[in-house]
Image (tube, rainbow, N blue to C red; front, top):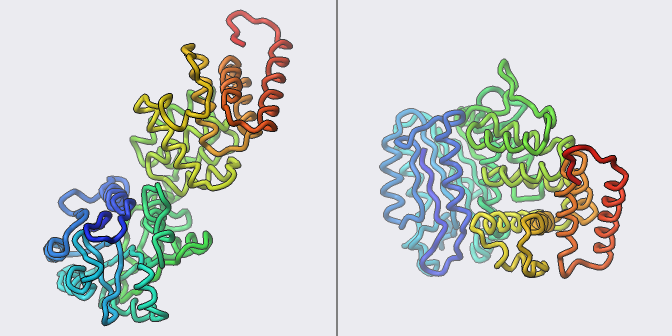
Length: 430
């Protein structure tokens, strides 16, 4: 397994930060004992290599492979004067790309020289506007360049950086979907995921989202190669499904989150739970934060949409990540994210907690009516005092539109009215 990516460029090509995440994310998948099961000695990574280092190291690793070889490259793709595909490296000069980029012919030669019986080449490249004009409609010629005897080639070639990745995302669009597929599995497939099955799933997923479609060039039976164990396989040992919250949902979600970071199958349980509408919204948002930390971007976006997040879901996700980082670094109250909130000199822990939760809800992109509904769910689980703190915190947003302020005030008023109707019970907290 050879994973190569160039995220940073020295001579004018725009950086592609998610490429670094691509290499790391795929390495984690293939080294996961429950998925790929490879060791560090057989799963190699190379980040931001120079042209010379890239071809020397790739060729050396290719020669080491005996049975199966998978080579992955992510970064800029350029087109030479003769139409040859050029893979940009850290020291590639776009004005001298013929001499400073890695020609696909050299990569082909290294892969073909490998003694491996089965070979897979995966390319995740974008093309500059100049390259697109040079390429014209000759997509077949491009695919012909990456066709190798006995090799299965999977290629993604979006036309611009906007198609390649979303600002602030951990992975590029294509590799992000690839990682999601390898990590979460495909329910209708068998116990192992083949390259061909992964391609078909990616094609459906990307086409359904109006994103650039991947292309395949295959020879012999290389497409039958199993890449990883299928985490969604429902054979004799099915993946446990969410049965909804058990007991106190907020304590239960803490347990799910803790386990998800330790075991692949528990991660699948968390993924299913995030989609389960029987869980309180705040618990599902907690799941979203953990799944995002684990790189489950596809599930995260799907869950946020299912919760009713309005507008740009990816922008909401970036705000939630910013919030998590600021809280972890204890910088929330000095940040721009909190600038529009009337924190003042508040030092009451309940008040500050309510404000913090209100900022988190606002960052999630949920409409105000869904935010208030999420907060009032706390009451039914014995957290009336916390619900009051969050509703008051929501009113602390200085730029809250008048109509939304009235909606929050109405929710707080209804909450206070409902609390007055409750009988006093020993130990109850209103």
